[in-house]
Length: 320
Length: 276
Image (cartoon, rainbow over all chains, first blue to last red; front, side, top):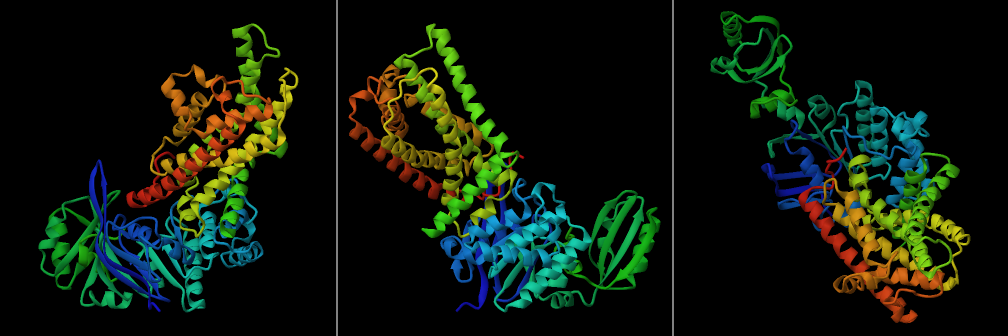
């Protein structure tokens, strides 16, 4: 019996097109245990979705092998498909001329769920995810949040052993995103053998939900541990958040002693900076540096380390 | 087998909803009949302009019956050309169907079945309308039922061949469907006998199930094959060749399906968005 729900061994995925060659995954190795809520955290283009596509049998790896519940994703897709399901965020999937209930019922039929059982499950899920009022509404008339709730229900309706949630809360308002997160958390605790793989670039989502988190960047897994242990990697450090006006050169910051890494984002009237530091004494040097260069500090705050700081320390870039 | 039948039934239901759910059933069925009837009347007008007469010739019967039944083939081909692209790019459901335990092949068979059935209604109406022309019908009902049902298998195979190609293409699905439909129109003796084609095209036409299908249609509706070339074939031989070429098409479409499915997964195009 396999202890791991997922095993990824030396997986590479290379896309070739007229525009050039893209190495989306580079020698990825990963194990996800059964019963785990596993997070893949990384910025856009890091390779999260490519890995999910391979695990859901939609894409073949260029090299290496991936297994879901002991079955090879490239050769045994027929054995994997009845056991999995997936949801992608930020898309508008669904047949607009069908009602929500019809859409869900139709997908249940592709999984061989008896019609009466499927209808019962649809009602249960609608109640849990709070969308009973739209069951008879045509999909074309749904809001983004309502459509995503329907898609979440579509995937959970089949009671999969492993479910892949690819940015499931992308673009949703705070309340809907919170409802979906609570639902996922409840679902996985109901049965021991259920496994969830969640990709996200929202660090709070990964931190709140996941038992373990793999941080992925430019196609490589650069860290894998619990959120707590990952944060311990930067426990002796802190982050300094600043807003500066106007936009000025900030490349000099990296030369200040005690600065480990930083990112800057351009805003309307200046810059927003996040600096990972290990020496409090250096804060004065930074403030002084801005004043000497004609920058005005409009906001300054010292914060405890987050997963984003771990990511920043490891890669030198932000998550969003 | 139960799983395949369930998938086919669900896909048929879905296709009917997508095709007809935009209006009331009566409006839909009127529209469904009006379109092909319009096309047939246009053909009659053209025939009248060219020959100066309209009634009772065997040539007109050949054209009228061939054209009426081509409505089924043309409609199925053209509609199926868009199907993969619609699911993949417009509804964005292709990947969710693909990762389900159901066979996508069965799903496509179901979708094609509805298109086929919906195209049969206008043909019945056109045959009734033919009584007014009048077309000299001599129906062979068992042969007509066999021809129609087996025609479904041929059209599904051809449609699936087309669909599996569009798994890999960007935005030309509809054009491929029209090209397929045009090919069958030109090479299958729909409105003119095969003997008017250059010899190499006539030989090529002998490999197409549609050639024998239209011949069987004429034999079952008009009681006679008037194409000088195809009339040399006995009924049994014609049925045998139709059966054989359809089987080849079915095997070819299955082989294509598995190859294209593999290629689509290797290239990573099952979620490709290019059109919408």
